[in-house]
Image (cartoon, rainbow, N blue to C red; front, side):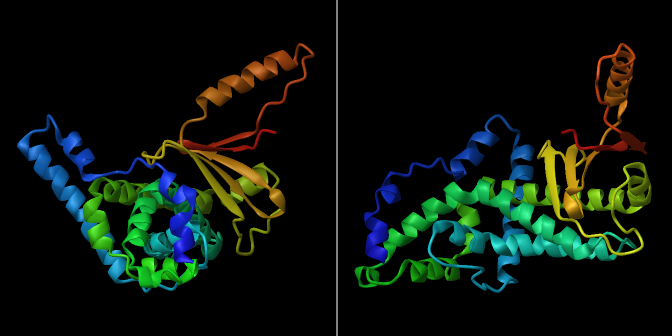
Length: 283
């Protein structure tokens, strides 16, 4: 019940640092007038994009039930659908044996998880203010009904205008992650035959190859700097690093040297191709 939500200790005691407009003003301190104008134009562009995304996406209450996590998932779903659709368009432009649906599904999962972690505290404050603003005649409605009401009346333009820096972070994060997936798909498509033979993967390269899971590390703000663990069927994992393998090659030679001295060391297998490389996952 709504009255129970309001009485819960965590509802009032959950302290949250939110991304507010004054953060934008602080960021602009010391900037030239031209820089301020450019920054404001960029943020305005992001707010417009997010507003358009929400206006074009129908709210379908994705697994919406009790629990604030589900509220976050529903509010963020339009963004995930937008960037997932963009990725799928790119995938369809490629002639590849890498399964498009499983690859897009991995982006959706990772993007939703990333945006959830970025958004939770800010959305919580909005949700709390929304609950407190409901009139007393709503006190007997269920938590599920409260959640549906919040999601269905969510005003994206008002929300992202209130938190403009947050809007910029959301857009930049989604853009960088989507571009990383584009590049990963490109590398997989062009290298899969060589990877298959070099690492003795138990996959049939004459058929569509599904991706079980993609885990991305590295610099979250730089789409060209990343480390990826790609999992195929039967728990087969391989690592992609978007840089030269020179440090690992030097390490491999050192391991070979000590191995000759009867010291048991295992060197990872490395396959370098055009500035990026693949390696087996170290146990």
